[in-house]
Amino acid sequence: MSAERGAATSFSQLVAQVEDGQFNHDAGDAIQDLVAAMSDAAMSKNGRSKGKIAITIGFELEGGVITTTTDFKVTKPRMARAKSVFWATPENHLTRRNPRQQEMELREVPTSSSPIRNV
Image 1: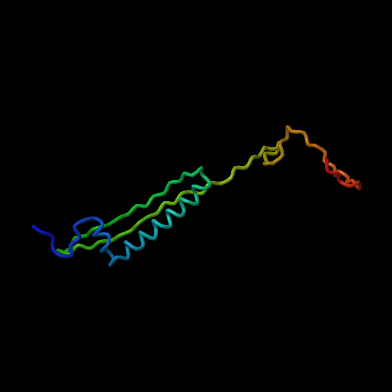
Image 2: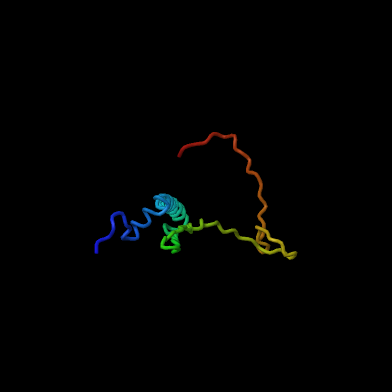
């Protein structure tokens, strides 16, 4: 038995037809955005990143008519955040200064009035 003309005989044909093609277009745009986000994230993660798109197609049969509902969910990679180092104070606050490290007294170096020589 041959398929009826215009019948969706594969997954890709079904996706192309649901919502008169709008779902296919929107999911394609979402994939393009996901790839861009993965490329951006890979720059801060040693060239690696992961993403995901989950497509859901619901079917309902009522009175011989099948209706579909579609949705997709995109999971973009998280951007790497920088780390910061702190130490705890005796009062349990955070400080950027290591309490066990001695502070160096800094002073301004006077500028020289003699000309700079090339050697």
